[in-house]
Length: 113
Length: 114
Image (cartoon, rainbow over all chains, first blue to last red; front, side, top):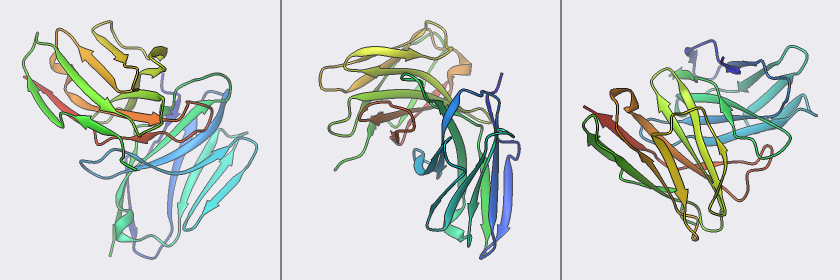
């Protein structure tokens, strides 16, 4: 049973436009949500996170939105750049105890120049 | 500050063999987590160690085991390898695994089982 779902395996966006990556979750106990970016032959690198007490967190070109009632979060990248081309993983963890991150299967973003 | 290092980077084994992978966390980080990444499956949690104790374990068979040393370095072992064990094995470290805390990943060890 997949608790974190990224339903779009891939996404192509023109350079300069907005990229929107979506993530849905089923576990209502999840309290923290993170996005990681992964280039080939490298490990995932942390991008941005959000706590369930917020509905938006912004860091430069990256903004994460959380809709708890819909159990949905999204990552917006504006403007998209060719260097943003990578696989993006959504991850979630429960707020209590030392629970591990649960990852989605990833979305491959291609930013076309 | 040096990042998370994993050795070896690539490994080829045959079915039935065993393998040991190594992970050195960022200096000062006491928590080490291991993940398996296979095509189309995302990252699946294997186990997490903190101060030489396994605190969490994912849904993997007992052939997958790990340990952590007093210097926080960690190893994972897979015995009786199967073709399906071919994957990228990622190690991540953090100061402690608390809710929302960032985990820093190494480059991974790519294991191919023939």
